[in-house]
Length: 374
View 1: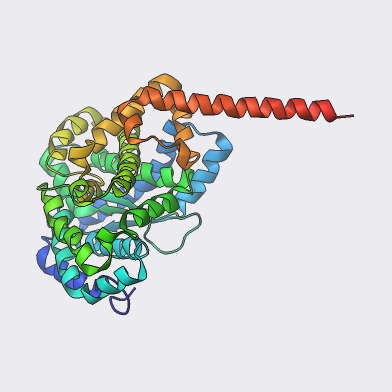
View 2: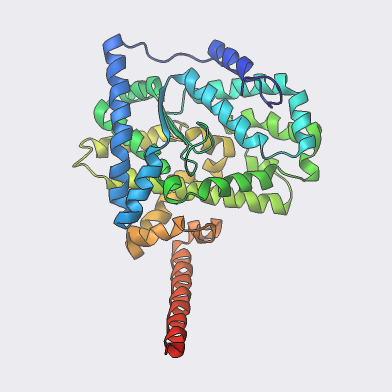
């Protein structure tokens, strides 16, 4: 995409506008900058195996997941680079979800929409440390996506928290690499998320034409500032039901990433306890891995995305282990619902029932084969 033609955002204007608005972050000596970049890239590479060690997938499956996860790009970016990449991803993700008439209306308002989005991304770019983008980076096998780590913001945050730089960089990379592995373990997950977004923004009287979409677009800055929630903008029971599915999915994925970060343990990240303690206080200010998406969707107040998702994952792991939790990555039907995020025992019971049903079917099939065998 070149910022012209049929894009719903003018990406050239977006980049130029963000460049004027975004503070560059701490200025580091050239040698130190190179060290940050090298450590972040190494942390991203190392993290895949660390995540797989926690998830305890079958060896053959783990090898396939490792290959798919490693196929995606790893980008160590500055704040402008993150904003530009996010603008590209939003254009690709949202643009494909719109009907032709809505897309045409959005294209007609491309310039004001771009300026509004530039303002939003400029604010978010100072808060986000890293992000896994399942929709970006061009075509990859099984939708490998791309990992973005925002070097200036990571360096600034680790200095503010007074934590060990090497440990903090690995900790952040672990969170985002968990998302890489999640999408690699469930190649269907990207299309599933895309279909939910399509339903959310698809054909609906409230979203037909530019006048219908404007309230949503205009509300994005308020959502980012915490003054309103996406759930308050989306109308109709069908749309709210879809939004619940998106929120439950994101809560599960973020909570799982949080648990994996800590499960790696102090033997790998010696400063883990201090990082977690100090980072939790900063997270309440909207600073953290993946923070852009959670604030944009207004999920901090709806589901307390990270914390409730992490409570769900820890409860499931205590009950049936990481091996049992991996069932959630086998199909959309096995993902937890909003209700199950708050009641993890219900999800465990449902999964066990599904397994027992499959086991009964397999047993019956084997018995039938035996009966007809000569």
